[in-house]
Image 1 (tube, rainbow, N blue to C red):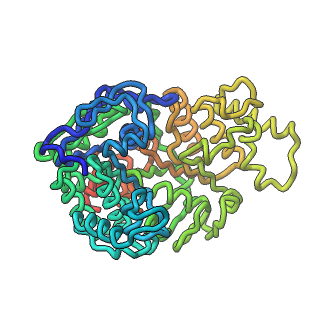
Image 2 (image 1 turned 90 degrees about the vertical axis):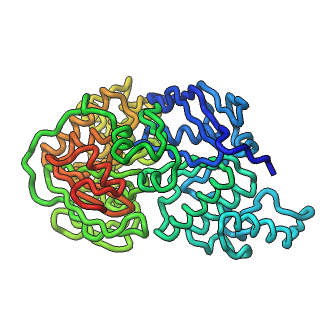
Image 3 (image 1 turned 180 degrees about the vertical axis):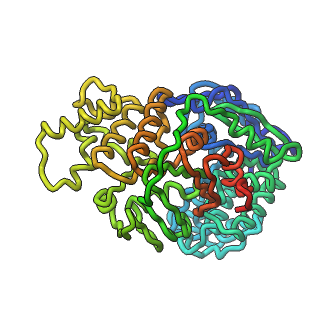
Length: 505
C-alpha cells in the first residue's frame, strides 16, 4: 500500500495548463490544486473546461502547455497508465465495470489473487470485503454486477479505485442517475474517503451537493479559473455569479412576432429516468428555449420528439393531430427536423460532399428520384440562403470550418420544408460571425411561422432568442420563464434546484 501523505499535503497541482482544439481554447492557463483529506469541487457551465481538465489529469488528453505535479513531482504529460500508477482514478458517469463478472472480481480486476488461471477465491473475497468495509458498503461479493442498481455499481467503482490505491479520486457528475437514497450512500462513502486521506475532485452541476460535501470549490469559465473559495466563505449566489459572468454582447435579440396556433404538443412524455412526464407546447412563430445542466434530459427529450428513441409513455401531436414516431423517418414525414448536438457524428456524413449532405434528409421521404442537376440546385439554393463559404459544393464537408459544417446541417433540414425545428446546441463550436448568422436564421424561421425548440447551454443565446424558456432538471420540467422575467441567475438557480421563478423545484 502506498504511504498516506500527511493531512493537507498537496497531492496534485496543475500549473498554467493550456489545451486548444480547432476553434476552441478549452483551457487557458489553469492553476488548480488538491490536498490530502479534501473534497475540492469543480463547477462551471457546460463548455467551461471541466471535462478537458479531468481528461488531462487522467491521461486521456495531452496538454499543449503546463505541468501536472503529483506530490511535488512534475509531469509534462501523463498517459492513462501513468496516471493510474500515480494514484489518479476517475469515475465517469458511464460505468467501467465488467457486468458479467462478480462484485469481488470487479473490485480486484487486474490483480486477481491466485496462480495462473486459478483464482484464490478465499483471498478474493477477503480483499474485496475488506475494501468495501472501508466504504461502509455491504454487497454480496459473489453477486453479478449486472444485477446491481446504479448506486451499488457506483459503490463497486469506488471500491475498485480504493483497492488499487487511489490517492486522487475524480468524480464526474456522480449523482446524475442516482435516486435519493443512493445519493445519500454516495455522500457517506465520499466522506469516508476524505477521512482516510484521499483527495477528491468532485464535479457537479448541483450546487446543493457542492455545499453538502466540499471543503473548497473552484469555478471555471471559458477555460479559465475565475476563483477558488472555501465553502464556508461563499454562497450559492456568489458561485452562480462567478459561473455566468457574461453579458449579451454579440447576440441578436429576437423581436416580438405574432404567435400562431400550436404546432407541437407534448403531453406526459417519458422514457425511463431520463425524461419523466414532460409536457410542453410550441406555437407557430414561437421560439421556446430549453435550459438545464448536463444530464438534465434535454437531449433525451429531443431524441424522443424526433423518433430516435421510443418513449415509455406520453403523446406527441403535430398541428393538433396525434402522431406515432417510430423512427426519424416518421418525424421527417410529419414535418419535424432535428439539428443534433454533435453535428460530426449525428448531423453529417463527413466523407460526402455538400450536395449529398444537403439533400440527405429530403431524399429519405421523396417519392421520386431526383437528377444530379436538381440535387445540385437544392444545395446551391441553401448555400446562398445560408451564406455557406465553401470553395466548391463538391468538397467533402469534413474539410469545412465548424460554422460552415453547421450551415450544411441547417440547409439539410431547410430543404425538407419542416414546420417544427428542434435545435440542440445550434451554435456550439462555431465562430462569432457564424454564430450571428445562425441566430438571424433562427429568428427568420420564426418570422415565417415555423415552431422552434432550442436547447442550448449558452445562456445569453437562450435569453436573447426565446419567447419562453423551460428549465429541465433530472428529466423533468423544473420551471418556466416568460421572456420579460427571465434572467441568467434565475434560470441557473432553477436548473440547480434553487427555485428561481418563485418556487423550489
